[in-house]
Image (spheres, rainbow, N blue to C red):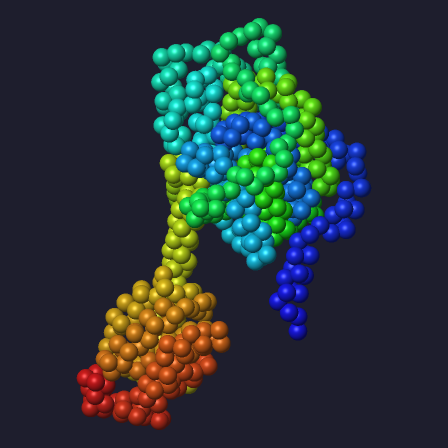
Length: 575
């Protein structure tokens, strides 16, 4: 028998890169390196923009893309996943920056990384697949709206107003723009966004984001346009690893934000890995290894001044479309960005903030899949309601609350749908060789019901009402072979119904109880009650035979035929 320590060691070894992962990087290195270069070109303005939007600056976004991108590529569970700062994470980080400052965000990232590693060790990755599609579509729509609203101050060229709610901040920025218009910044942002959106339709493979940003930077610099503020100075290289940002005394108050960041990192990364699987043939990611890789990435990124990271769906899609075949492509993407950090920081620092705002505005627009939203809204009313509620909650509250609300509502609606499938139908008696006269008399005093579907807490009380309102008969037979599932609530409600029928002098027999339901029925005392009052039988004919014998013992029917005496019938009807 293996010890817990050896099992933990084996579990850790299963999460580390295998020889097959390393061997795969040598199969088509030229194609992977080209894909990595393309992804880096696409990722550069996004990393800068998301770093600025998070409140920690463009340098933090680049550090995240380099450090988290490399570690997640090496240790993650997907060969094609590309990780870095994302818009969804920015949505969560903005209120954390406002409340705890930059050092609080870095501490939260480190805590979230440790939580992700713990989730990987607990094999929690498989549970992420249960997030319903309307919830995913709803928070994606909400994220797109929030990202777009976050760019309003930079796109308008006004200082970012105070406040945690993006709607309030965007409105205040608009008021400031009306008082002091900055047409240079606005035109710069709109031009970059327009080039990206039009270029994506014309030549999807061309990274128009970097083209537009470079063009905007050159025009602003050459023309000497005022009003388009640049990013500002960037560090020439990554900062040395440091633990100086930790706040041991504030760890308790940072726990809830860390849980939110970890939940989002897990959800978005696994969704992105699933997208990569869907774009390829025969590839399947390991969800637990993906959580482990993202955990290591989020532990390391804050040490170098980076923000929490996740798998990036857009960059992963570009990686797959450009022919990536192994982890080498994502590693190359991180390496190219590292070269830019060390060699081109002065040039990057001249990029106008309005140009980055235009990049993120276009990204927000491209996140919204109109066809998918339309199909989801038309599917069912429940799906449409879940989608709309999740999107509104993302906009009004935050992403994690939105996902929780969406999951709760989706779960409640799913339970209601399942509960509606449960039925209690009266079925005709099959009295075997009895005569027509005896059959009629038995049918007058025996009623059989077939329970069909689940008998659990969401549907059980309806059964209680229907069973206890049964007409004045002597025997009730419950045919339970079609009960698909039963919980303790369903068993207790069934017991209550049997007891109420017994108090009215009605015996209850059951047939076809499955082995899987016997335990729960026995635990609440239903089987003992049936055995005492009537019985449990394997088949319905056996239960009908037992009911016949019960009626015979009371003088209603005899062993060879029906009892036709008025006394017997009156005895049955008055009992």
